[in-house]
Length: 492
Image (cartoon, rainbow, N blue to C red; front, side, top):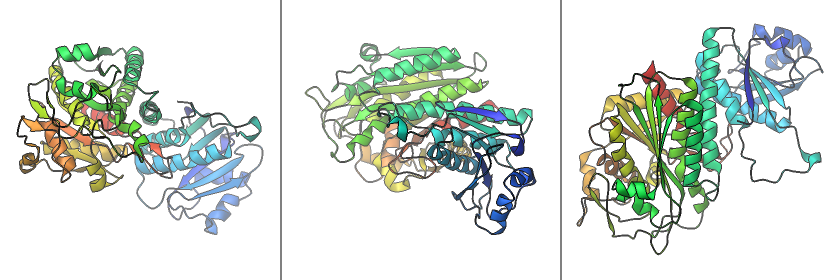
């Protein structure tokens, strides 16, 4: 990450900082820990609160400028009336950090007087999210127009083992989300299937994981005709990348995380409309989420076995591309009639789900920007969660809530399977517009054999086409948080 995140046990009045971000709830009073800072500011903070110039509403900010010593500025940030959670702390911290970036303070300290361990994680995640950017391809502005970049954020925490552990956990997840966001933000001519190999190799070397990479030839030997049918329209080498983290007992079944990695999706022969097609560079966010989660899990050194599997290619129209009506065979022997070449993610995931069986999963969770239908159904506020085992679905939903990536359970009733019956093959790859996200999940279920499984449709949540206030438009980091929280809960 470009920003350095640190923890300090200092009291607010003891820090020398260009900016002290103070997070307060609705209708706040001055916390005793800020009495000395208020004195340094000539009572300006207490007067501001007494006059209700600042009321602590969600996302409300107010900047006070002080002297040259101690805290040079205090930024009050409201977190609203909702209970303090990792998510509310993250949002407020991100709002404060984005203001620090605009001010050009260079460094900042963050103080939340009633923070618990969950809130500490949220403060770290928020500071990372609020400062994240992708400047790689932009020409810097003239020197005279530049503000100092925000390079350092310090979270004020209690001097305890639990607080330090919470800070470290937040930092690990933030590093994972930074990887996922960077992969998501890269244009399709920069993020290619080979990029996932490079990132996977870096993660494997950092955290002593086993790395397996399959190309077109190796996948053909595995019989992955479903995955390869998507890749047959592009000269780029498709890649299956698997990372194995061994934190548990040698014979313990792993949690398997699976991600769709379409580096760009034109729709293939069933080509998408031109307007907004550029957003299809984000069709690899499921795979990016797996990579980010594996980085975070490696940093946290969780005592559990985890396997991350991604399948990456580009869906392009060409003279060799798969056509509507073609029939392809997946690696479990099932035949698929390709009705719409733009329903390609499920064709990739089908062979990944078959491949996952060799690891004897305790549970497998796949994530994919799979359907526009889930965006129609749930908008940009919830992940679609599908699975045949309600207990495991509930486990995933709990992980999503805790991580600030809430999900909503969707049905997998057999009645919907009628829509994906084919006249010439075992099944077809789309059941039409009605219940599109459900029939897509039921398609995937056909390739799950003998292990518990949950599917996450993150098409509405992995990236945002508008500024969300606490983060700019672009990649959100979803589903890194859900993956990590699920695995962490399993490891406890």
